[in-house]
Image 1 (tube, rainbow, N blue to C red):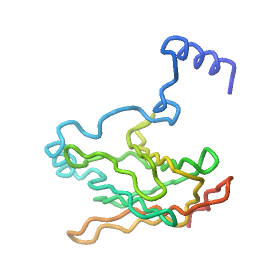
Image 2: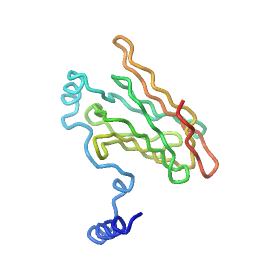
Image 3: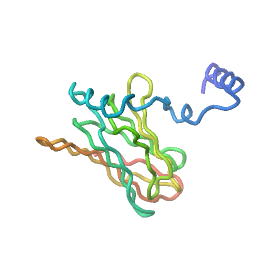
Image 4: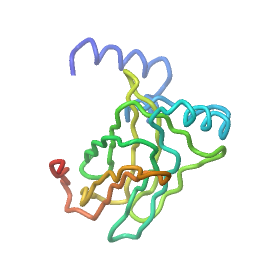
Length: 167
């Protein structure tokens, strides 16, 4: 970290009393799309890439993040914080989730959030109960009138988890 960055961080901490976790994770606390269903329909009608559904399921041996998508996307999962956080970077995409959508944890995931980061990119952050590794990742494209799916599977790891290279 440069001296200038340390100084900026210290000034922020002095002003606010703490550095918000969202900033530390690189997320901006922006809502998905204001207006819920109407906003989602607008994005979908415009043909822009969007996440239209999201869930976490599984147990303590294998946990899966599933995203419902309307276009083929690229996902870049990486494990951080000794395996206790998984950051999934996605090129610019709208989160056109249903009105009132709240991320629900399951399995190895204790909390998760999504949003936009600098330069228009998008990000999903998964906090985990113990160190994890990315066991599988895939993007299944939409077919005809069926939506596509992006999948990231997590499994327990020993201490210093590493992200496997993309297939």
